[in-house]
Image 1 (spheres, rainbow, N blue to C red):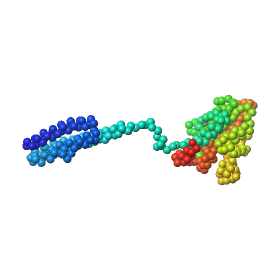
Image 2: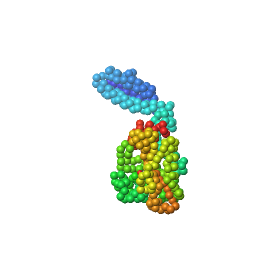
Image 3: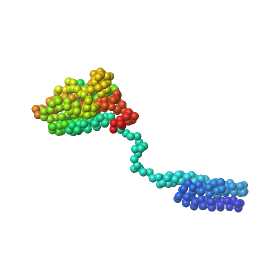
Image 4: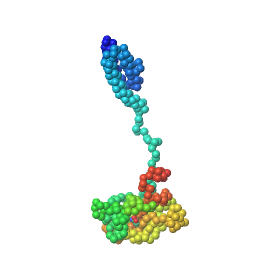
Length: 354
Ligand code: DAH
């Protein structure tokens, strides 16, 4: 009986000792302190382990009572130890961070792969640089625009096939609202807002319902136009030739072929000497030696009238070329579609041009 009482008394002493020790280890839960605490109480020679062993000497009747008391304490200690273990892991992490502070301001370029500009951005950047050198200013216009700016004011009558639903994306929100089919709409916005003389360049996205290796429903054009006194077809040819040579090399030849666009008169198609065969004839140029890049011409008097410019005073030229088309020719690309699919490996090829 007295041994059992002793055991219970010793257990309650051990419990108080543990409480005190736990308090100090919790305050500073180093892994060593946690392990020492564990050994002191529930290790092989620990106080509670020894109490368990002492049960052997207790009488048969008293053993369960003392056993239960000791066991309860053991469980409490085990629970406390497992939460201490967690605290100790956090403590270790804190210590590590204190020793090797994380400098979030360090550059990460040694870890991240180097990005590059999109071929269209590269091409546009080069074109704009050249146009600025020639004294042009950049102007912008809306991608979703009214019929008036995209068609009517550009002398494209209502029955013109370009307005066909199959080519043009019309917007449901409002009648007469559409996604611009060319950057020529910017001519109208600009001319209505500014007075001549004008030397404007306007790159932008355009939209047509079309998709094959050389056509995507969204693509890029660059529009340029000049309005001044006594502007001639020769001025236009000079500007086109000059920037094409700047981009494709000084030996690059260009040619103008008569063509029709409602907003110019006379109108022409601009061809670039084939970049692959230098004019000898190959598959890319379909053996013609020439590649089509865009349209141009002298601004039609009806266009000037729709923006209220005096046609006796002012004359001008305009042209609109495909930026993507020029990028394909410059970077020797055969398919236009992957340009707009965002594939990292495809786009990564252009880093050497950046
Ligand atoms: N807007 C025409 C197109 O997308 C291209 C064009 C032709 C623009 C003649 C012009 C031009 O400024 O004068 O097909």
